Length: 398
Ligand SMILES: *Cc1c(COP(=O)(O)O)cnc(C)c1O
Image 1 (cartoon, rainbow, N blue to C red):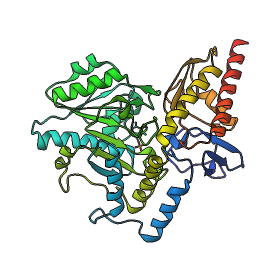
Image 2: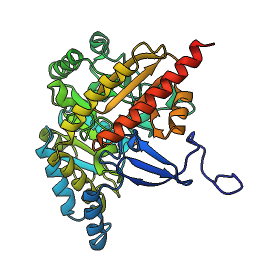
Image 3: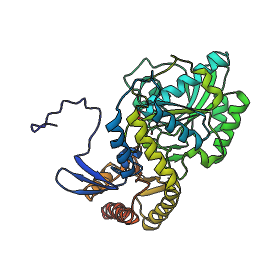
Image 4: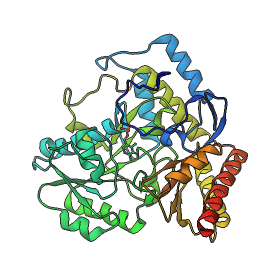
């Protein structure tokens, strides 16, 4: 925004009236010097807080060596990061890209190509879920089970059908001889912090085995320790054939990844998929340092403990508050569902120096860094609860 209030940007975002200029750990400062405690981490991006030392060191080291090289050459940092990812997950092969939508595009393409080039069954249709979110490219917004992201973008690519989340019979009824995969989030983040039922996920995995379908899990928001496990599928005792990462993967540096089981690797032959910026030496140095820190410092476990603590604290401090419909959380992906739109409440929380974000119209989403100091978390939760109590008292006094 210029001094005259004019912006040369497309107006694709509703922006909060805050300009952040500095970040360190779980603290942020705006251009007036006001300090905030960060309970949003970008949107589940800065899982190690802002400017984490371990990532910064490796980034600076790599900046001195080599920034960019084409994927037509070997990139040792890519190999190192891919090995760290496959050593710590059910996947055997990794494709690097730059964003979440691009990772899901790769997953969709791999599922189709595996069906059409390896299984030779010509299948293409993917079952996704109502209220899901998979990205903003044409294919991923089509995969997304929310009409609002599709308005004005028709015609959309074919090959997607939608089921109600946590309804296995509805999923079964959608399987036909064109179905190649089922794609879902283990916790719907943008949809309102809605976790999948354990029984539902087991049944989905069984259905995929029976019908020879690929199970694709979108871990873009849930991955990298966020839910109290390195990857959210670990909570459910299932192994996806394909899963996708982005947001938290680079510790704040842009990088995405699509990971798959060994038998899928042959479906992507040389030249079948690619990305100029996928897995640059810099991006993969940052992500390796971030992931290594999350694993070696056991930050997934910390997210599980702090998440449980947070939900308990919210439940006790907000007990009886008529604005609260439900408090849900898996690790440090937490939703406070309100009985009314939460926009005004969120703005007031920002004014009081704590940054939170919505998830759907009624839900306040808390996604602090996995490293947030206990004292910062307590202070921020007190602010959130105080604002909610104040708002409740103004309603009940009317
Ligand atoms: C954010 C998100 C995406 C899209 O990621 P981009 O990097 O914005 O393209 C896809 N799926 C889920 C679950 C997400 O949370």
